[in-house]
Length: 306
Ligand SMILES: NC(=O)c1ccc[n+]([C@@H]2O[C@H](COP(=O)([O-])OP(=O)(O)OC[C@H]3O[C@@H](n4cnc5c(N)ncnc54)[C@H](OP(=O)(O)O)[C@@H]3O)[C@@H](O)[C@H]2O)c1
Image 1 (cartoon, rainbow, N blue to C red):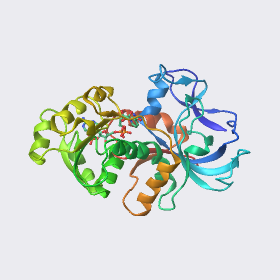
Image 2: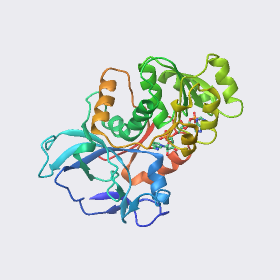
Image 3: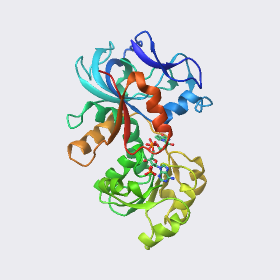
Image 4: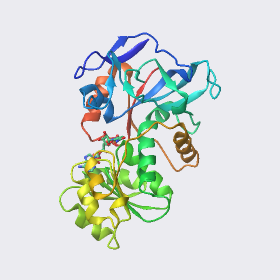
């Protein structure tokens, strides 16, 4: 099969010929139709996760997948050949990826693909959607209140904004540029510029204080959140471990077929849309990575497999 691989950390990802992945007794082989790109993909390829995650080369990149079940492991009864599925296919090591014609996925990570989504939309949902969903859960954004979301227009922030708004929260969302204000409003946020003076601007917008904050950016986002959130236990970051010293939560997204079903339900209720910023064929994975590295992408980048 064709796959986007690297043979060592720091290499440019390239299309190569690879054997089909092994399919465990509780896994399925998925023919990939679309695979989202997330910043972690190029962090892995650059070796940033090496202190925590074993990597085996050649390493196939990508953790998001939408596709069709081609074969099931001997112990699988939950899914059948021909089922349309999605998954956040992170294993406890880096080797089997999703930027390929086929990937093997443990059943625990799988959910049906919702008919409410196109293939590229479904491929862009899992990792970022789960991160948003699990981070909102970590700081108990379950009803109303005011939520500050840093980088509200990004892959993760866009989902978090929509989910929080659908739960009745007032969302104040940060962006680095006024050109993104209409997009943030479309997602359900009141936009505010990040950078110097952010805490002051947020206080003007919400003089009564902010109930929870979600950092999908890094930098001084946790420190700014601490200035405006009433209870620091309701600050979560997915990028900055210093949040724990304040009593907040660091969130590392975990694969969950169950949580993906919840995201499907939101999409089917019309409360969640996947904004596909741009699609690339597998062969242009490196161009897709370069676009992601700009840090300026609104919504999701998705690789597609014909
Ligand atoms: N711990 C975990 O499990 C986990 C899971 C997923 C992601 N992450 C991390 O979370 C971060 C976000 O991921 P992502 O997929 O959402 O990334 P992304 O899609 O690449 O985020 C890009 C967005 O960031 C916004 N942005 C850039 N600079 C900004 C600034 N100074 N102020 C406000 N917004 C800014 C941009 O909006 P504008 O251009 O409008 O400013 C853009 O829309 C990454 O570092 C990623 O590695 C961690």
